[in-house]
Image (cartoon, rainbow, N blue to C red; front, side):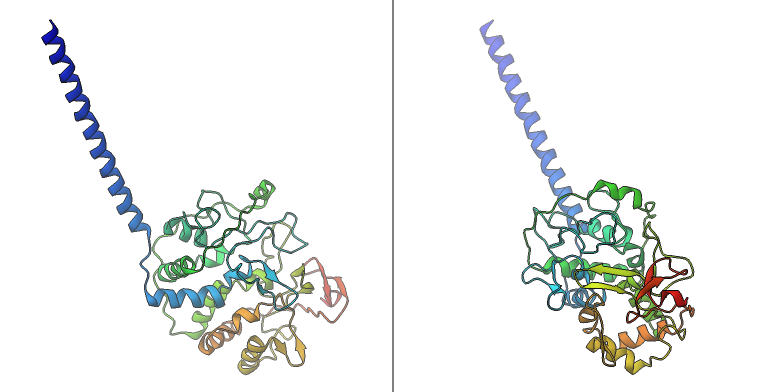
Length: 333
């Protein structure tokens, strides 16, 4: 009897060890598969992508203008050591609810360090956060949607390369949900564009620069007003003061008097003649763009539908029937 019990006990031990070894092998396989899947999510880091990403992030897309605390007492550029670390709220007094702008530095606890590259790319082009939430449309994913796969990869690769900054931020105010547009459909592959046409190249860059975000008036739900594309008049109020955006269309009330040289000079210096642009016009980011890209943007602006909409910040604010707010020379429209 004792011998039988000993044999039975030994058999149980062997079976248990066998099951444990199977479980360990299965876990190892899952870990390996997970590692492989994770590697597939990571964009390859190359010098070309780092350079292209730097150009798009630091200049064309001016990502750190929102995703950093800015020093508005000087040039409106990121506070030293806080580049990409996010901020508690955009300093715009006209927004109905304050916005928490996330930390996109590669910090694992408070930034993007634990996002995989597919999540990062989806946030940029589809407006869905790494946790599945819809992003506030102040994040210009609707215009970033045109970004080619290669340019998105370059942006992610570059942002991954900046110093990690620990910056805990509060969660988003849930009242924003009422302002959020429907979820955008997933994107398929987006190939590089043919830039042989300067105006098409300019249109692509204007979308990445989100020029409509300031230069197209919006309604109370943050949606662009119809037939007012690039016509200016959006009120931008914050630590930089209060200013209405300019009409960029080729109408006489817009910038029809600009030539290419004047446009480049304005972006490079932040001056229109003797008049200095307000700091909220992010020319300090755009001035680092290449001449051929700025010329392409000007070529595209020349193709816009002219919109008669006078905006003059040297005049007192008056109600405008076109954009439905008060701005300088509004009563002349």
